[in-house]
Image (cartoon, rainbow, N blue to C red):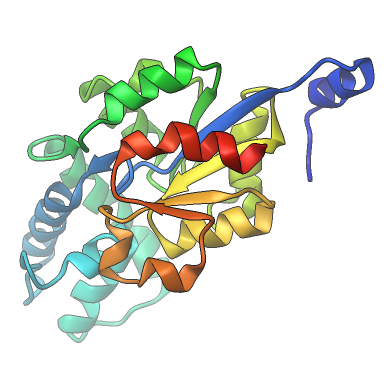
Length: 240
């Protein structure tokens, strides 16, 4: 495990470190599929790709992120795909996404009530996402969730991102919290792999994006929930 200098100092002094719950963003706190798909299709039209992303057919592509959508469009149009090409196109797709960031995206039921309850119970809250940090922050702000979180780590915050465990560990460290007293809430295999590598238990949401691509039970998380209201009791049990 990695700890900040302040955290290590507090351990030596016997000062109890804080407990933390870290949330994934897309598919965990907010349903963003349709706005992401809209951005992808606007990008496809700009680039002259022959294919389009369709509701009820391509959500599994969309939830894997911007580069996955670009790859799909390139391959469907029988164009060359390299990491350099994906990197070149990615900012162009993000420009389209900024224009429709919250056109249809919505906060899942019970999220705000549960976040407030967790804060009142003494939990430190953070977000660890593979969305660029500036877009994640803007999304949270426009959906009135920003003030619940004291740390936010995006795909471009550090030189690494999920499933690299350092992304999660650093989100916890920014809260001056104890990795051993922390829980991740997520929806995808990427979240599961990140939590496992960091040694942090994970609660996975059945209603999120990840269930479109994976049987969550096969990922063997510590818990799977159908409602956000289950989080406070489950999180407490997982760190005790």
